[in-house]
Amino acid sequence: MSHPIVQSGPPAGGGAEAGDGMHRRSFLRSSAVLTTGLAALAASLSPLLELKDLTTLERFVQKYYKELTPEEMAKVLQRIERDVEEEYKVRPHVRDLKPMDGVEFVYALNLTRCIGCRKCVHACVAENNQSRTPEIQYIRVLKLPHGSIDMEKAQHDYSPETVPEKGFFYMPVQCQQCKNPPCVKVCPVNATWQEKDGITVIDYDWCIGCRYCAAACPFWARRFNFTKPLIPKERLNPEMAYLGNRPRRQGVMEKCHFCVQRTRAGRYPACLEVCPAGARKFGNILDPESEVSQILSRKRVFIQLKEEMGTSPRFFYYFDV
Amino acid sequence: MNAANKTAAAQGALILCFLALAGYFVLNPGGNGVHVQEVPLVDVAFTNRATARMSAAEVIRTEGDASGQDCYACHERDKPPKLKFNPDQSVVNAKEHMDITMGHGSHNRNNNCFNCHNETNLELLQTRDGKELKLVDSAPLCGSCHGPTYRDWEVGIHGRTSGYWKRDAGPFERQICVSCHDPHSPKFRPWKPAPGPHSMRSVAVQADSGHSTTTPHL
Image (cartoon, rainbow over all chains, first blue to last red; front, side, top):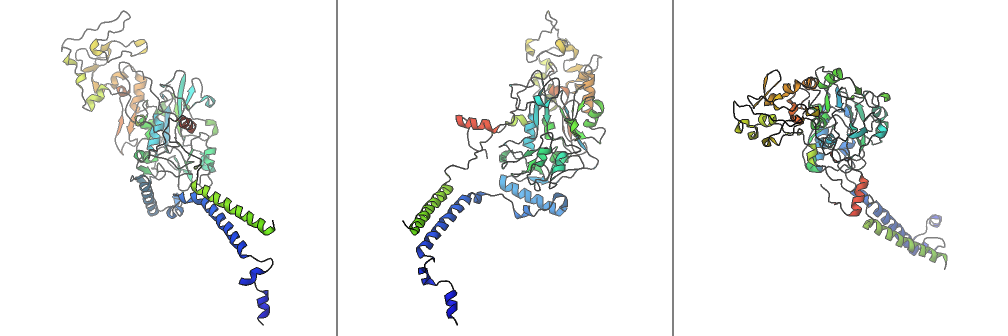
């Protein structure tokens, strides 16, 4: 009974002598080719071993910002503090500041006063922990010839010995915190949204880095972390907010958020405090005594940049007339 | 050469090829391709919040060295100093006051010291209607000519503010006129601008010429 089974089975050890079967030597050679091939493949993939900071389980399973309970948020903030301390050896203070009731922020910038010194740009970088290499800057100061506001003639890389230059004026542009923000509409994962105090925020842990928002923004206000941001640890600002200036990762979007870590605690934004010309004004438009309310009720000429786009910026440029 | 030998040769070549590839990948002689040069850090002077100048009022307020402001170290009390004028009506600046640049008003028309200083008490200022003011309270004096700007300043439209926009959350500070404007020549002087956005391209050019360092700041 067993005879036919042996015959139909695979050749046993001595079966290598069969005409088209596997020879011992050719098997070894094929194995060697396979092994070296796999070794070459493994060697080519070895840089993946250096890939740290991909994600952690905690971060991977973290819920959407708006769904986090206060207890979960506290845990997330602790996790961020731990991560930052590990990376920068500085213990930060990370808060999740919520918008205040009865507050809507508005920014006003006096184009008569701005001298184009770019101090706001660098105060912002220092306050908001932006990457120094490559440089990420939320504010772009445009130099424009007198006579019109023609973006085609704007320069942002001017570097004269001294400013202001004769025949030019300067127009700093940053996120305009639109009332009708196109960047929010295009986000496929709702990682950016407008809060009730008018600030459009980004949850850096929810952003997938598709850059649709950057494409949608008419003001070129959004910045993308194409590489891992480089911040010297002695320049890290440890006073942080979840939706604000906590360090970002590679592959996420960021932009001006009116310094939520300061303004939601009642303070002025960093760019305003550093302006040597006093050209920058910020405050609560719902308070009739605030500087911005006074400006909007007393000054006569306003510009909402690219007003025709219909995004209704909360950022007003004005003149002393 | 039979088929078996051909296969053997091909397999041997493959093995050598794979070994060479593995060696290349591990040793990585070409580097990682993208080598990002460090952008130089911006001078922290560009992020300080100091006002455009240190006024005499500020020196007094912060109780700094105000010895330069002691008028009666040189002047005599009860003897108003006499002003001298050039033929073009500009005031002659005494050599003891050479640190002062006179240039107030268009065509420097406001060039009489006692338009603002009180001639009978040099430590005080005076408005044109005779009201005496201390140096630290100079804003209404400026406002006596610069009405619209003074109105703007009073409500916070003109000038520098810092601290808390939410007044009940913490202190806030509004700078006075002379914190930024030199009363003797109030126009803002030209500034050196902070560096503009750094193009990574110019870094590469620097690296070629051997002028930039690759030492990271971290």
